[in-house]
Image (cartoon, rainbow over all chains, first blue to last red):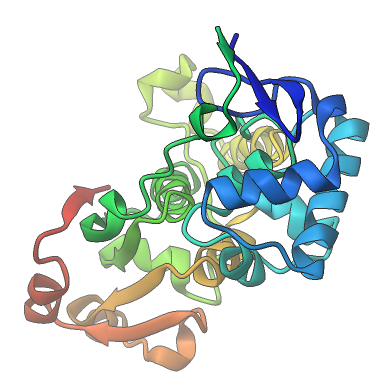
Length: 104
Length: 171
């Protein structure tokens, strides 16, 4: 597994670049990850990210967009605006979570 | 492998630009519960990948967007060898209700939404929903009878224009 150095410390990532250890993540790192994929984070992005991380910690898996809406109250439409084109993947990357695995 | 320069850390390739020209058109022609899901699941997945997605509902596929039926699609096990159940049993009264209930439960257990909610998600994700003119005329249905997210009732010719350059799947 690759080890990247970001924010002056070692970060474990998978072949694609997704973090493999969510505990190595912090909100500063999110900024860097977002920049990597051409996103600039707003307060609203952070609200979404915080919920996704809390939910993943509780459920043991990255929430789907449906769960983000149903449980987190973040409308699907807005998630597409905040994380354009590929909201589920981009959100999990910036939040330091694994890609969602399910079909839906 | 150790990457010390953040600019050389692996960054997922989201290929935003590459998907720019990709377009998927799904034709949903069946009205049973089990045949509604393939189109909806694929549409949802395509939208999540940033692919322009259209679903064209035709003939029995209208069941999926007809407000009266969309929440009440059925699964008929009789005549379906993949259920491995004898037709003599599956043809008994009430069996369609039983098999439908079972399939609904299996779908819900996987945390997959029911058809109306799935349409809501696809619509909110920017998916385009279209209804077939000939089917609407045959069934005497208008846009008022259909799910609100349906953008229009269109002809076969309109469909040809819409699907130009798209990957097309008939379900």
